[in-house]
Length: 283
Image (cartoon, rainbow, N blue to C red; front, side, top):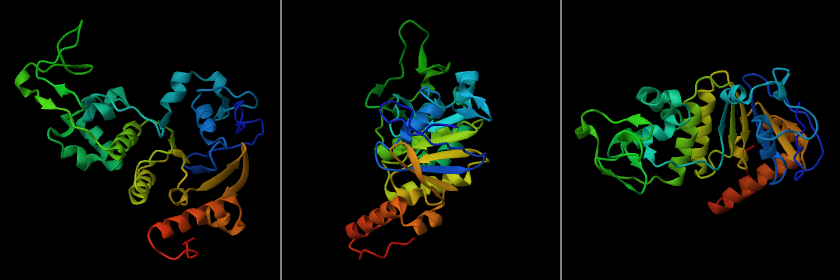
């Protein structure tokens, strides 16, 4: 059980949340409602000041953090863009995946970025950086290397002499999602605004792909774009750290509460931007 707002800056109001195996749960609410705080608790980044966080009935206090985090895949809104090859930028999600191109491409395909990476000047070996990568790249104090953490090939003529390529923010977000998907041993996938830099159609494509390749994993999804959470098994609406509404999309729309108001407001705003009449949002 998790008190949804144990962090002092969020408040002290409580509420219990259970995520069942294979279930997709979405958290929605205004900024400061406690959504991201809950994610940090589940990941063991913070300790609750009251209540407990349990995994299969066992308190997180009794679990080794390293073991816990191996069972969780997380995609945050903020992520790292490394000066490495496209392949290595995905492989940092699971160090055992370094050099396993088929596995990396499968994760990239599920994240909708495989075709773009394969089309780069040197494919997945393209350097993603503003810097120039010479054939004679070395690492101070160690053996000559071609990629960070990877031995240089014996035949250095195979190393591409290249200038780095810059990706768009949306492409980097897809790489961040691929990092989480490259891990096939996780039980819980947490997506905290993972596609905020994508347009609505691309974002929905990502979430459809995640559902198709969930593979029995549980999912915890946070998004301000309610159209992307409407297919969740359960949607929880938070306000001041408390769950004030719970149900699937159809149930919450019939309540005519906070969720319905937010959904219709977003739909009306989208229609206005595209010159369509308001008041006809699809529910």
